[in-house]
Length: 105
Image 1 (cartoon, one colour):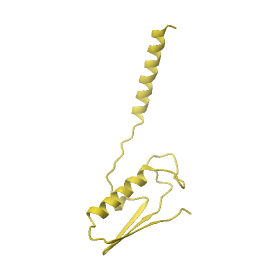
Image 2 (cartoon, helix red, strand yellow):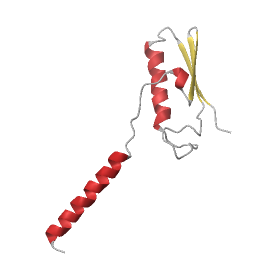
Image 3 (cartoon, rainbow, N blue to C red):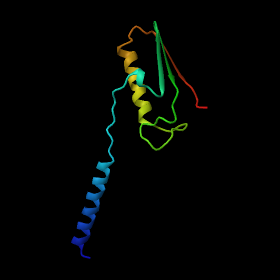
Image 4 (cartoon, rainbow, N blue to C red):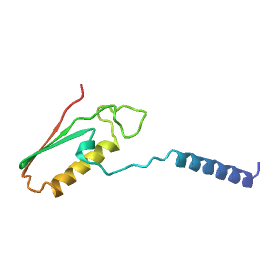
């Protein structure tokens, strides 16, 4: 096999690889609200806000794995970012914020 043949073979492998990655791409929706949270509970009572982390192990952003202690999931961060933005811009009268975490059983 000549040098040109190797280059063509490598290019073909990359093209097949790119097609495979394209087929597996998933659109991630960053729009959410407290009624759709799976990992956080946000409660606003007058001027006190409580944000509780209670990760649902079966509700990972992508199917095929369970969330475990110290595992990372973008879905948890999307919900957290939404909650913080709501507290900053929609609940501006809140003067006290409490953040807690519930460890999985």
